[in-house]
Length: 145
Image 1 (spheres, rainbow, N blue to C red):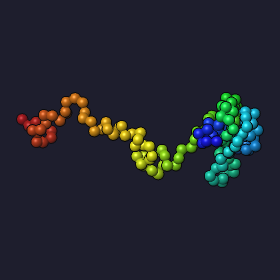
Image 2 (tube, rainbow, N blue to C red; image 1 turned 60 degrees about the vertical axis):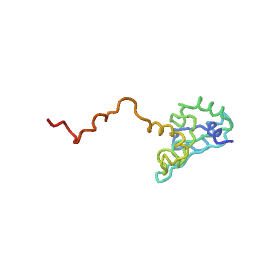
Image 3 (cartoon, helix red, strand yellow; image 1 turned 180 degrees about the horizontal axis):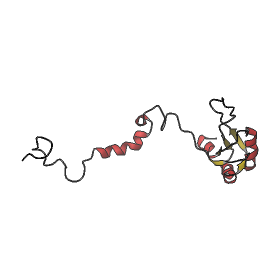
């Protein structure tokens, strides 16, 4: 499955209780269609006994099944908590957007998107020149009487 189609068939499930397992998530979402994969991200540091970060990604074989799961499971109670189920968003590249280590103007596509803005900077401003008539002034400040 292509990446774009894969993300359309993936739902984000937030608000999971700590005791929820991968198997519990599969059991809750299998009625909506064939599940390709369930991911329960683990915390970076497991010093606090946490088993997962409190959310999961459920990838279905078909994007229509993902929509059905969102419609039926969003705001549902699961292990005593209210779930937030929505369309998953594709992760941003580490080289793009805020937090990247590359300057925005060096990122691919930025110049193409913003090239029109540069042309506007070099055009002459409309209306009379605000500096006209100031050529004979030697010093700044009010005129000396």
